[in-house]
Image (cartoon, rainbow, N blue to C red; front, side, top):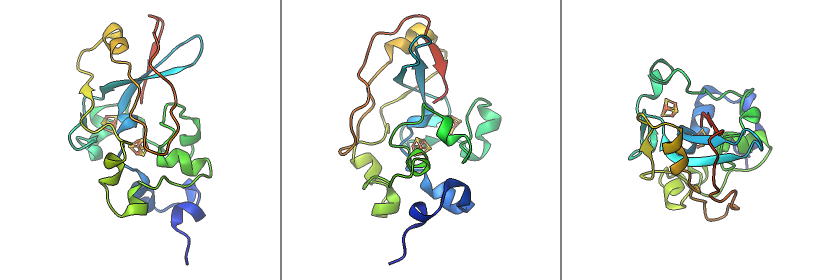
Length: 168
Ligand code: SF4
Ligand code: SF4
C-alpha cells in the first residue's frame, strides 16, 4: 500500500494543497503564549488573536490574515523547526521532527471533527485579545486541553511581570 504523503515527503517537498491539508485545525497557534524571559519557559493562555473565530476554530479571514494582523506568523518549511511556541501536537511540527500524525488528525480519520472530539483543539475555549494588557494576559494562563494520547506538557504556574508576549 502506498505511504501517505506526510510520511514520504519533507515539508519543503509538499505541494501547496498537501501543505494546506496538513493543518489539523486545532487553533492553538492562534492563541497567545507568554515567555518567561529568564527561563524561556512558555505559558499558554486562552486568549486568541482578534481575528480568530473560536466557534469555527479557524482564522476569520485566512486569505487576508497578514493584511489584517501583520504579526501573524506564516508557517514555512524553514521556520517551523524554529517556532518553539507551536504546540507539540502541531502537524507541521510533527512532520518536521520526522514523527507521524496523531490518530485524530483528519488525514487519518477523514473527518475534521475528530481533532475536536479528541480534545486536541481550543474550539469554543478562547476569548479575543481585545485590549488586554500583560496583567490580564497573565490571569488567562491555562493548561491547554491535551489530546487523549498526548503527554501533558506544562501546568499552570505563576508568572512575573517581566514575561514577554510571544505570537502563538
Ligand atoms: S498549531 Fe499547527 S496544526 Fe494546529 S492550527 Fe496551528 S498550524 Fe494548524
Ligand atoms: S490572523 Fe493569524 S493568528 Fe490571527 S486568527 Fe488568523 S491565522 Fe490565527
